[in-house]
Length: 547
Image (cartoon, rainbow, N blue to C red; front, side, top):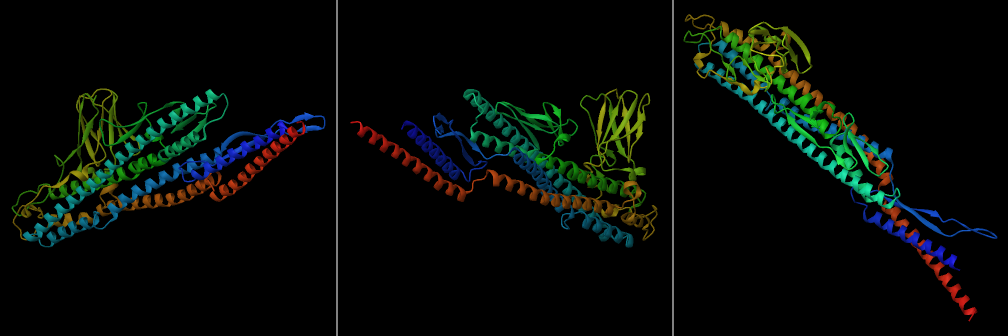
């Protein structure tokens, strides 16, 4: 009789826990990261009797969550890939809208300027025509400045986005470490490998959020903790300890931020997630665009000033530079390493303008030779040092060194800031040097014609590219990269949605299914209760028979 009662009570308990679990599933159907739970039952050991083994009821083995490590890893990987491509596409579109737009781009203003130069060539003695050229020169310089400001604004936004991503990653990693500690403590306390499902779900949700920011890999540990790695195997979370990522600029270029892990620069090893997408945007689209725009600004100003300086204005005075590039018409910005002992200066070389390349350079000295590294592709050129002052012929600029010692290094930026620094130096129309001689010959337009021909001369990039073509290359490259990013983002979105659907089909709560389970478990509960009632009735009958 007691066996019948015990079996019925075990069934009643199993049905009750199943009802509670189904109810919990229903109430958490819309909870972020919640995995559907199920009660796993096991048969109690049978009892041997003279007629065979008699069952003893049911045990509730565990309340398990619907989880698959492979599907979870696939979702994390897809999430990282989609986040990376989506951010890259979104940011690239901003640059594309700036350079390709007729109202914000450079092409219309450049064309208007050369139209004004042609008008001066047609009527070099006309003051109104000359005034139009001066005005168009101002407009062109301002447009260069405006585009550069927009690029700088995007760079500032990019740095802010990088910092925000790192803050999120550090915060999520800290929370994962805290959950690891709770799970490990619970495992040690219970003495069995049984972990709180809600803590596991919270940790998986946090890891998925980290994956949105940067690609990660995970390794589960026997104590219930989860180790999280990123990049080339760098540990982000180990047990209850979380690493912290920081963002820092260099002394020579504080605007270019690098990601540091325990003081080690790991920017080039970041992959996946919004962090990688933002870095790719900066390194592959934004900064190269700024360099290309600077190449056009510097090359245009140098060539125009060089030819303009050979002419004469209406007063018979030799032509002055029409365009400036900062504090000096010819100076190239040089930023020394803080520990450098020597002095290095650089100046644009009008005879080698075609060798200018849209890139920064690093000049280093080892005590014997100078090495000039083009940072866009890390190509090297070595120059032997002289005992005293050394003059180096760089690509489009010359370098002068004085007092350098072994270990000195310098950042040279011939194109990076040129678009932001270009200005007009002539405000009076009569100072336009259109004539080829300082004699008062009416209608002398010799230099003006040469200035007008600059529009169609292949001057830049080793004499293969005109000014308009250089800007066209910028527009084309940005457009191509933007289109590729959009296509990739669309493809990755499909893969991500498929992975998410697979995960939801496994772990998501189906309300119709849970409603059916409620009825099933309710019937089980009622049947078990009825069995208890029968056992009680039999017991009462037995007691009545012996009275």
